Image (cartoon, rainbow, N blue to C red; front, top):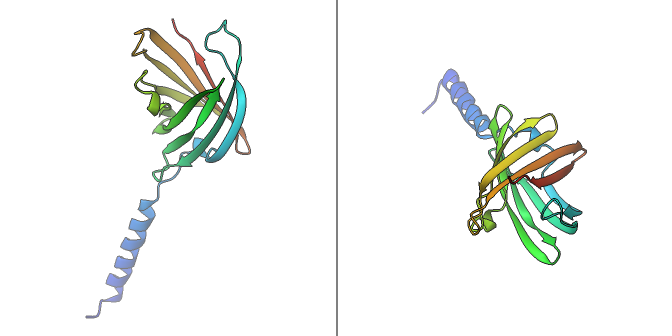
Length: 159
């Protein structure tokens, strides 16, 4: 069976449109954040406690939908191994959410919500420790410095 040229062109156009529609455009904030990352820093358990060294190895990958940065890795704090797994999700209109420590969810939930302002994504968390039942508040900040470099900081802001 022979198809008329107009029908052939219509079928080709439909196939090309369906293929093009399958690829999602990545959220611009995630540009330069994918790949393997290693870093050292410090952490304080409380504002008046001494600084402790922290070492992290993190692998960031962009989900095929382009709106989610998947985070896997680990950090070591004074001999304590902390698995880091979760994601940061672009919700649209500079709104983001994140779940960072899924494997520690039995201790507390760790869902963050926040907004992007320039190169700085500030995410806030508020919840209860499932063991002590104390209120927990924290702010997680991801600041892009360019050339694939970024800083991550987290500060507890408990009442």
